[in-house]
Amino acid sequence: MRALISPDLLRKLTARDIEIRDTKITGFLIRCRASGVHTYRYNAGRGQSVTLGLVGVLPVAEARAAAETQQTLLSRDTLNRLGQDETLTARDAKAQARRALGAKRGKRRHTWQTFVNEYETLATADMKSAPETLRRLRTGFAWFDGTP
Image (cartoon, rainbow, N blue to C red; front, top):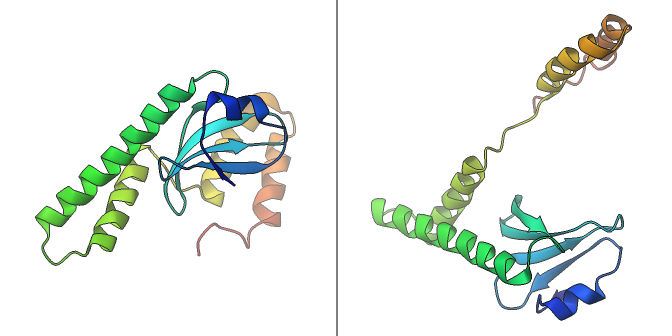
């Protein structure tokens, strides 16, 4: 759904799974959930979203300013990449800028092995049956190691 994100729109939000995209700023949206938790987000591209804040906590004007900042960072990074490499197309430069934006957020790849290792540290501290549970996880899901 597309609409102008404004205080009037916020009063009309219901608890259902929907995304409302802003008509002024490309990539700025509200992500509504059936649980009633609604968040402001900026989508820089496929799989590249930044959560800006919670609706009701962050005013619309501040969320819009944060989205504009994210858009400016993406544009500036794209232009810098184009200036550095003359063979680069605008599309490739924008894709590289999106990846850099994701790296700045500290995005990390989760694998099955990292999950098991993190779970092991938590489980051994709190569970009597941790060794047995970990053995079952490792043998039962040996086929799933997180690699493509």
